[in-house]
Length: 523
Image (cartoon, rainbow, N blue to C red):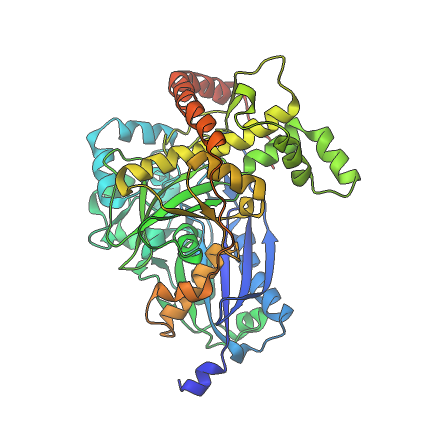
């Protein structure tokens, strides 16, 4: 392709396949998001330990979303340099030889394999597999999901042609090929970080062969050859290159420019994560942190939390329903109204703590049985205290992961914030005071999509390395630490941790009771 031909292709389309929606972006060569489109889809919870989605709905959202965002900007197919992908991790779908799903898309939040995780962690084998694969032993992991299917659905396993994730499903539908990038593969618990290949012992535990999994490719791998029908539906040409891309977590680091020593990315959307970049695979001797691939030269170490913005939604819908409705009547965003109420309470919520473990927890506890707890509640506490305590609880979870990361990476010098929470100055300042470190926010919070676009440029040979991110990403004014609030949170951190550890056995007991007596309504 000539230089002039490349200049005539000024746009990159980024498709970010998330847990609750697929967001598509059009980004120019200066890193500006020119158009975006989001399509939501439901999560089905037919039982307390299940979390599933319809893979066809997600595939449809990708195709429709790309078409919508391209047409929204009224660009021609010839102006699109490439389409590059970001995707949520840990999903699992069984398909037959015609790529027909034999199961739902089982998401990271599915806990049906919790017993298998506990059994594997009780043996030395669990730590050995973690040290080679970088994926903590937890029900989120496809390794554990496959172990559950091995014992509970042997007939289905026999019928299955491939076990794949949601992005693999999308690419198989688009191009008829089963491909998985090293980044998503490194989040399966089945991928050897040093060999960049499937791990034989992990596959043996899962009861699958390499032939039942997708072909491993680098995150910069490109595929071409759309059908005329699909090309028309997406406003592209049949020869538009598709870059397989990486996982949303590692791309979020790239998209906020957090890929240098001391720079830590914190993302809070529905869930959340704390991540830092290293130049070679590195696992945690205590098994509390993940290690996932970005490229051959960059690996991301960190930990995810289950309960981010979903906690605020729970507070809105279950605790502050009257306040949320009043806000709507006044034409105010309920979240803004509840945040204002929380700001009327001092740091520490007058001694009220909330463990926001509403859907179990991943890092640093990796405990699917953990549950939410208000601790220290007294007659003097009001609803505004409960709201603030819930928001602080999310930050205590982030602080716990940050402490684990600091143990092996050293202290952070700056934190880059992204995700929906980054829109709130109140939450950003709360995190600054909780972590005791300056927090900055990039000019665009679409970090995973921006990261996917940068990776697309690299895959197309348009940039030499990922340091080009510095030309794209501008950060706003830093939030500085309020020392008084920081001291308050330091004092409460040890209490928060102690409450969790003292209740650990009771979490197991109440979970057993819930599984025996309760079923979640389908949503």
